[in-house]
Length: 186
Image (cartoon, rainbow, N blue to C red; front, side, top):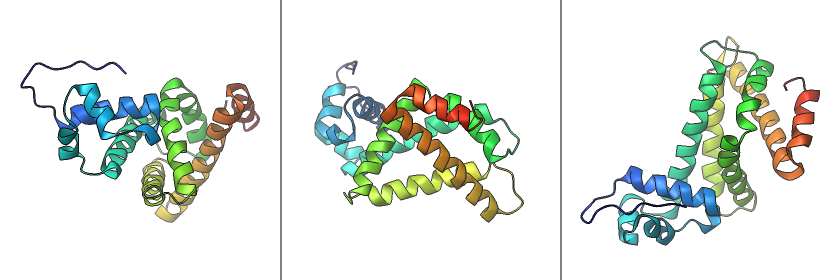
């Protein structure tokens, strides 16, 4: 984590604080994300962080949202403007997601899923909200005449993506890439 301390009197914005929170979370994980670490990285007091992000949930949700937007921007470029089949979306998404930038997002996402699976608050609600937002975003990019059909298809894409990414994290790149090739997407 490299932080530049601003000149005396500089007022950090919520964006500055969120930028640093993302860097801390990526470097140390969500379990180690604290107001103190974010503040130390910017050379400010904890109170300034709490002013913009009153709870750790607010800070974690901000980090997750920021990384999700980053991921959506990358995928939007790969997908283009046309609606596609689930297999086409998966084939276009895999090279983007199976990258260092994708790893940055999904290492934190899988950490959140672990916390949610263990029932650790506030993660069950946060993960569900993130998954529903991801499903709705994908549903706008998948073929289908009705939204319920597009949402089901989006869930199928998500399940396969998450499975491949979990394999990538636990068994390594080669195993995940082989599975992707066997699925016809890599």
